[in-house]
Structures are given as C-alpha cells and as structure tokens.
Amino acid sequence: MLDLNIIYLKDLKALLPYKDMRPIKSYLSKHQIEIFGEGSKRAYVFKIQFERAQLQEKIQCLKNKYGKDWMNVFQTEMKIYAEHKALLEESGQKEKILPASKKENKPTDKHSSKFLEDLQFFLTEL
Image (cartoon, rainbow, N blue to C red; front, side, top):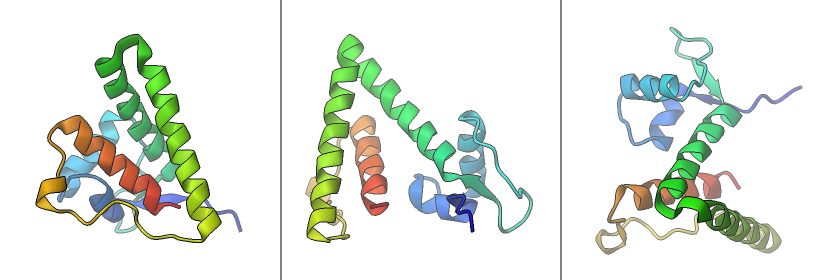
C-alpha cells in the first residue's frame, strides 16, 4: 500500500507553537498548504508540503540575517544535520538529542527558537 506521509491537523499542535486550530489553519493558508478532509476530525495535510513551508521560513530567516552568504550557512547546517543523522543511524539510537527544556537553555530570540523547533522536528523524524 502507498504511504502518503500525512500529518493530521490535530498533530500539528505539537509541531507548531499554537494551541488552537484557528492559528494553525491560518498558518497553513498563509503558506499555501492544502487541507484535505476539512470539516472532519480526520483533516490532514501532506507532510512534504508542511516541511517545504518550514524550510522556506528557515531560508528566509537566513537570507535576512546573512544576506548573500545565506547559502553557505544553509549548506553547513544541512551537512551537520546529515552527519548527525548518519551517526544516529550507525549507533542505532533514536532518542532526542536536544536536552530537556531548562530555563538556562531557552533561546533568546525568535529565529533561535524557530531553528531549535525545526531541528527538534527533524530529529524526531529520524
């Protein structure tokens, strides 16, 4: 059977910093992510569209922060992520890498928070 890799809207609450469905639907609409089965309890989006939207946000943040050098920073981050994923697969570990949320480890700005959320999302998908 074909696996479509979908994410139910109710599960997006854990992936996005929203607790209510209205801002989640607004986020999806803003990023042109189509909602399937809307109006039912089993409404979902395609995982690839959701990940693309998050990646576009990350790229825009990098462009704003690093200007013309954004591609070098992005490639470095992706290389580190790929190496880290390979190490995890090699050692057989599937646990979260980031430490538990502690007061002293909280990010200080919006971009850092978003990056840590993105990284945590990708690491949990391993």
